[in-house]
Amino acid sequence: QVQLAESGGCSVQPGGSLRLSCAASGSIFRINTMGWYRQAPGKERELVASISSGSWTNYADSVKGRFTISRDNGKNTVFLQMNSLKPEDTAVYYCNANISFGISVKAYWGQGTQVTVSS
Image (cartoon, rainbow, N blue to C red; front, side):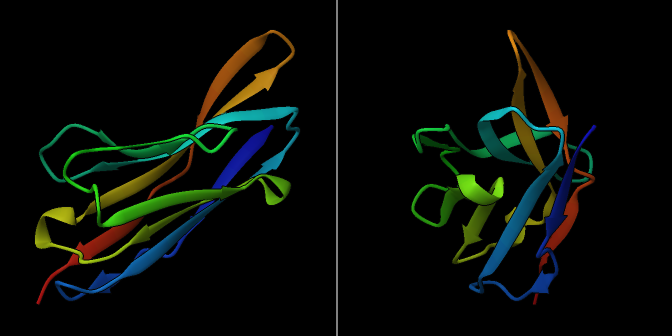
């Protein structure tokens, strides 16, 4: 079994910063791409940022220049540094990891962590 444990979500004022963390644990052979998604009330889940095992990154246009994704492969952990937060960043943020088991790959999700940006 594989589990993803997120932390770091909370309430913050506009312009503030937060750092989300997500640690994968369990029977892990190899983690490929890791990423962060978010879902606001009444909206579909959307990709925020992703990072490959070789640290290639991809960002949603709405967060480019404000958010930075990084990972620690030795600790099976992915981070999301969020700066200059806006009210529209309010959402539940979910960690995602694509993990290889031999020739198969399976996607895992965390439980989600709430980020609220409000004055």
